[in-house]
Image (cartoon, rainbow, N blue to C red):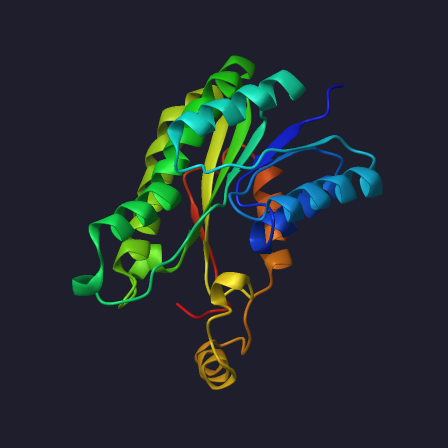
Length: 244
């Protein structure tokens, strides 16, 4: 049987990297993407290939650019025939008052966090529909559920991802394609490396579990979604240690 292929955006570090390693362990072929950490991504792809005896393809580029996403999937198709599982993980944040937010920063956050999800799904779906199977996992945030002060653009983008997930799940259910999202709380990644020690401890005190989540915990949940019954679709699963 043909090995299944997973495409992960934002795969060079953090949650995307942990998901890649989890699926490599299960023998998947991997298409890995990131925008800036190109050497890190390529080294990681080689490491997974050597460690797990799988095929990997590292394709750096900006998924907020629709033309690049088309090329990304064209390369994935040429290498593996198509993408069976898509993980939309690439994301950026912007912290500050709305009145200090420029239109350029707003557009950058929305394009990276939300438009990229549209573009990747747009290119992934035809192969999945043809096969009458597939799985789309969107990495979202608790701020997409409840909103965060001084993170309006990020909250809006993740709220859009959540609504996008629910709507697309209904559209693709007849083709046996599941679409779900993982709404992450505070995960110990580079994005949350902005906190100093005091701020980190204060935030940990707010979380009932008393700690940040790990990328590996999110990766385990992604694996569970990928192997869940097909009837599980259109869901926003929150992983936040009981915080929100």
